[in-house]
Amino acid sequence: MTFYLKYRPQKLEELDSESVRETLKKIVSSGSLPHAFLFEGPKGTGKTSAARIIAKIVNCESTSLKLRGPRKIEPCNKCEQCLSITKGSNLDVVELDAASHRGIDDARALKDAVKLAPATARKKVYIIDEAHMLTTEASNSLLKTLEEPPSHVLFILATTNPEKLIETIRSRATSVSFKKASVPELVRSLGRAVMGEKIKIEKASLEIIAKKSQGSFRDAVKTLEQLVSEKRSLKPENVEEYLLEVKSVDINEFIELLIQKDTKGAIEVVEKASGKGVGMENFVENLLARLRLALLTKVGIGSEDLPQIKKEDLIVLINLFSKAGGELKSAIIEQLPLELAIIEWGGGSPKEEPGAEAESLPAQKMIPIKSGMIKEISEAIWKDILTQVKPVNTSIEALLRAAKPIGFDGTTLTLGVYYRFHKERLEETSHKRILEDVVAAVLGVPVKVICTLASPPQKKVIEEEKNESVLTEGEDKDIIKVAEEIFGN
Ligand SMILES: [Zn+2]
Image (cartoon, rainbow, N blue to C red; front, side, top):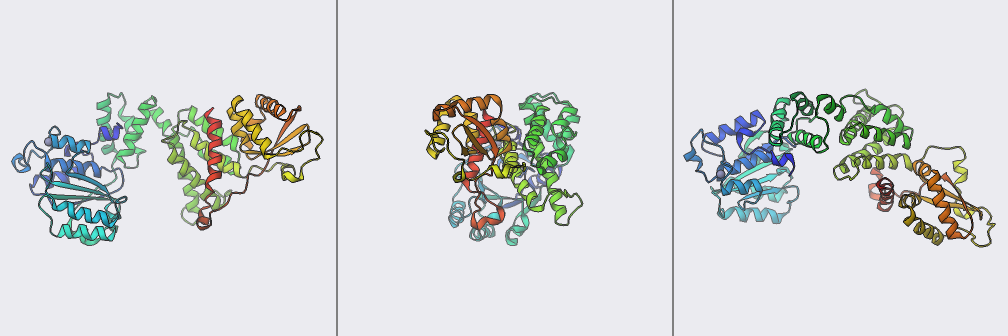
């Protein structure tokens, strides 16, 4: 279980946001709960945690709310009801994500369900996340229920966009505002995980993590968990480096390499950063923050331009690295998504080399054939070469899939390689020797292989998504697969 789930607050006192804690305590202590709450605030500020605590308070078996009196407002967290709510298995506490339950059927289901009495709990609690995403039908159905609420039902609506919720619903719910967490609140929240896991960490380190978490409890705990699970040093200076506060990697230099389409140089920066213990998520975050400033400047907001790069290219870079950032979590090799992004960016249009254009002739203009045996490298022969290379060296096979034969004169095979980085890998002596051996075996004559840069196959833009320059799926996959195989080895 992640730290975030394991150490999420289980009672009001554990809610780390002081204002939310005090507001909810006051409401609960009053002894009369509203029929509907509206929890509004940004992601990761503890809305769902608070909603579950409320669900426990109204259903805790230890004693009824009234009997507990004003000072005994917390759930026991031990009874059947409390435990099943913590586990998310309580039949009467229903968590819905409005973003994915938007249809009229859900609206009807909601209307019908609220009529029924709770199965085992005192009250049915509906926690509706992203409530502003409900369809009009669902909203109207919810509104009707809120107009004449059955006494056994409690609604807790959570939303990041309260202004999008219809006013009549808002006016019938008791609003609680969740704000971005302050540094002391974040440190307090981290404290639970630190105690629970018996982590030895200074307060200064926790404050560094808190400052970098942009007010999100979830992000703060996630960072701590990353540091611990990757067995990083927790000393403040190391934590700072991990979070890239200290400029151990110069993001501007990295951007410069990207602008120059220096794929090799850019990948080396990533390798170096990773070697130094810089977290890749933070690397991407810093990169995107810088690119964003430049983009905003291009449209007239701010003064952080990168004059060497066009607005359109900036958008491409931001998209590529946003995608890479999203893939970091599931990446088997930490730096792989970034390397893919770099190759996709730099590889698409390799740095111009004198003569490179002239060398990448289309296949039909090929050199006269001297060998009587093989006249040209047909698709079948090329496939055969790939098949034969694979068992010897999978990296080479992967590299060859981002290349094409562009010339064969009987003794020399010229390969057009789409990406500079791949070309350099193929030209490494050991790789070249293996490749030449296999080609010779397939063609039945000794063959020398030379590599040159060639343009990759045209990337088709899907018509209706032209503005976003969406690549055809097949080619995207190819590039990614190739890179995975190269780096996976
Ligand atoms: Zn209980």
